[in-house]
Structures are given as structure tokens and as C-alpha cells.
Image (cartoon, rainbow, N blue to C red; front, side):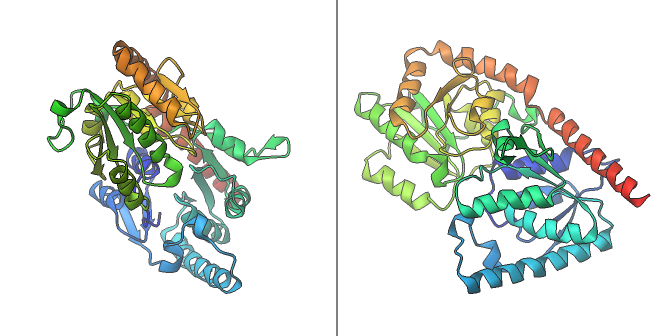
Length: 384
């Protein structure tokens, strides 16, 4: 993983995978370029790491900023190939059997390096890559160069449908969480919430990116406040490239007393303890980890009907599924909880039960190791 992006649910999922692997059978070795919170956690667990220098021009480029300028494309390909050569040498030197790249840039570099070294490649697909030309190219690249693709939802799996068939390389494994970390008995830090000025608390946790739909929730809060629900508070947890835009929106709409930015937090269970309902207003989402975290703590979830969200939330049972880009639908769902507080406990407990039965880290690890074992057997067969 290159480590140059904001840390989100996907990064935590890969960390818990690495941490919880059967270390008597698998020896994890993490290659990274830039240090971040996840890399530090990996090192604290005593897992071996290797720093790999990558060119900043490819690290800093988001896929929606890619331009098809011939000179830039040539330079981009040059840096990718140069990086692949570096990774290839590490694969050979370290006698690596399987490489599991995390982010899209790492998938490109690692797949090129692994294929030239005759090593198996497995990767998670956590993005809904189906809009732009560059996203479609990333889909085709994965289906061509990966030996196995782990889709985090059925919605993600369907991205790999070409014609009438979905590639046999794709297998669905839902995200898993360590349930022990999400005990309800959490202390709420004093800097999170002033209960004196709030009688209902909504939460949103995620990277500040347009696809996360923050403004649709903010519009819903505005509707509620202007219609008399003045003591509602929205806790906003996260950081990212839309930070200034979102802060300015709140100031311009005079909602600074109702929408509180907490920044990037590592104490997510404590933050969740302070809210009544979590909202995921995304317009694009694969399978949000934060929905599982809220459910594990018996907190109901309101989520938009996109991607894998409806695969985690059961409408009217563990929360509400609402149309995307629809502030009126969000505020209507929030009002149901405000007007009938018993729904919070009822739906929260139903979500907690669902999380324990379907989304534990143990289930995730067992299924992932099954894929690794399959690839190892194929390696042995090829060697023979």
C-alpha cells in the first residue's frame, strides 16, 4: 500500500486482515511508500515492513484528475514501470508467494511486478469503478492481471459483469470488524459533545469527498433546524480534500451550533457511543465499514440506496434505506427516530445481532485465508 491517501475504512479493513491472519501459516510483509496511521499500527504489531520510494507525481494523482495529455501519460507509465521493477526485485529477494495490493495505484504496480515474477495476485475491489474512462480501465486491468478479486459486496461483484457473465475470478467477502473493540461500555470524551445543548445527535463518519454526500445530510439538518428541531446536533468525523468547502457551507448557512466538526478521530467507538443514529448519505459506496461499526454498538443506520449499503442495512429492521441525493428523505428518516425514540433501541439491537452473525472479523479472515490457500496450491502445482 502506498499510504499517501487519507486513512478510511478500507485501510482499517486491510490492517485487521494483516493483524489477524494465521501467522503460523502466513508471514505478512508490508511494502509501503508513505508513513501513516495504518503503517504505524502495522509496525506496532511487530509485522515486517519495507519502505519503497515512489515518485510523487503518481502518488498525488487522484483518478478523477487523470488527464490524457500524451507527455503526462508517457511519464506516468515510465514511473509505473520503474516502480514495478523495484517491487519485482523485492518479490524475488523476499521469496514472496502471494502479493495482495491494497489501493488502485498499488494494484497496477504490484500486478506488473508480480506477473513478471510469476507470483499470484489477489486484491480487494472496494471502489465502484463504473463511471469514467479511467475507472473502466481500472476494472479491465484488475480482471486481466489479478488471479482473484475480492469484491466487498454483491454490488461490487456486478461491476465485473461483461456481457451476460461475471468473471469467475471474483468472489464476495464482506468487510469484517473486531466486535470486541465495539463494546457499548465506552466513555464519551468531553470534547465530543455538550449534551446540555443537544437532545438528539446524528453522526456521519467518513472521508471528506464529494461521493460521501455530506452536503445532503447538512441540508437535511438545515431543514430540521428551520422547522423547529433547534437542539439537534450533527457530529462530523473525518477529514479530506472537501474540508474547506464543507466548513464554509456550515458557516454560510448559520449552522455552526448544530453541525460540529470533530476532525479525524481514532476513538471511533467512543464517538459512536455519543450519537443516536448514524447517517451514510453517500452517492457512491462499495460496502461501508462504518455501518458495521455502528451496528456493532447497537446504533441504527440511515443509508442511501447505493452500492453495497442495502446489503448491510435491512430497511425498517436495522435502520432506513433512503434515495441518494435526497435531503428531504434524510430528514424524514431522522424525524422517525426523534418522534419515536423506542425505534433507536429496537433497530439498534437488531443491527447488533445482524453484525455478530454476518460481519465478524473471524468470518472475513476464514474466507480470505481460503483464497490464499487456493492460490498456494496453484503455485505448488505450477512448480511441479
